Length: 323
Image (cartoon, rainbow, N blue to C red; front, side, top):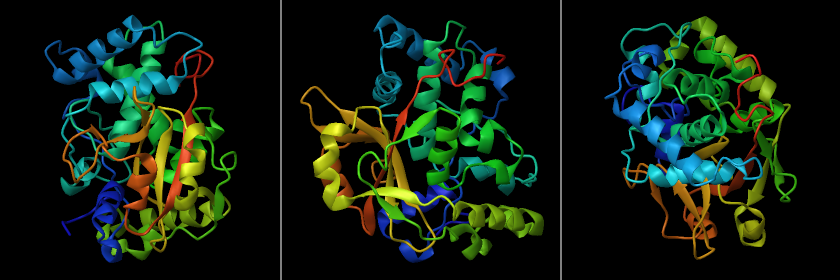
């Protein structure tokens, strides 16, 4: 494995079957090298151009109407992103460069994705399109921050939602998504999540004793929130209840780990439910040829899926009324 694998890298390695050495950490976002304020002022910046054109398209196609599920707008953004390169490791780039885990920068991109940053970015763009305010890079960054960090507040490395199941529960608590595990008959997975602390040497940030202890505390706290996983064999029974734009997380039996990949459910014109995602194996954002049940069944050590439905919020975005 490469140096300093991340949570997101963990996901990609799990898909490849390197289960014995896998670890969560970055499911990395892609760093632009610019602050949100700098990037939004550069009219020639390709990330800014995508933000502007994609929000304009969603509005033109009527995907921002109040009665339209947020997932439809999000999946449309994903379709517009098809072909965009998959790039791992970027969320941890600041650590490799000597940065402190106590001050984690906000990394953003619409021109490079990994599996989780694709999900976050599509949701963020859809929420901005629903807002009446201009889709600035700064507002895009605030949307990402709201999803990526516990309670929506970026306080450093430990405030990031490293385990994707917590990404779902934290988002549900704040009205950003609805966990459909119980509704779809998911089975309880109460295994303790200890992947990060059990593989401390693989995480650059965990060399700091204080950071390690904080992650350890977070993992212990997650024991109180078992996951609801729809077993692989039951997915065909619930596909008609999964909507296009629902967020999918692929559960695993790997000790100490919750999921190995994140994506969107995608139902095309043929009515068949597939997966829209940013996979390592394909190298770019794509829609699977296989159906969702077929895709999950082919994942080594898979146990099923977690499903979360994106929600609109009162003011049309994931931002609070005062911004």
